[in-house]
Length: 119
Image (tube, rainbow, N blue to C red; front, top):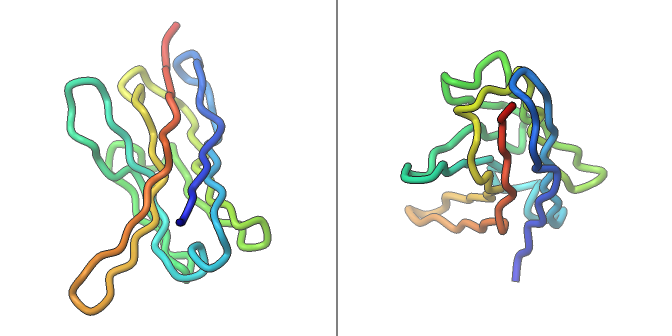
């Protein structure tokens, strides 16, 4: 059973920063595409950012220039550094590991961590 353990959520004022962490096994982080998704109340879950094993990252337009995804292979951890946070960033953030192989997808999810941006 693959386990992804998230941490780092909380309450922050607009304009503030938070760093989310997702710890997993080395076998997962070295092969899978690691991503952060979020789901706000009444909305669908959306991909925020992802990073592949080569270190190439993608971001949803709404967070470009404010969020940075990174991976530390020595610590088997993926991070999401969030800066200049806005109230619309409020959501439950989920860590995801995905592998597409032979026309099928294998993926795992963390338990989610709440991020609330409010004054």
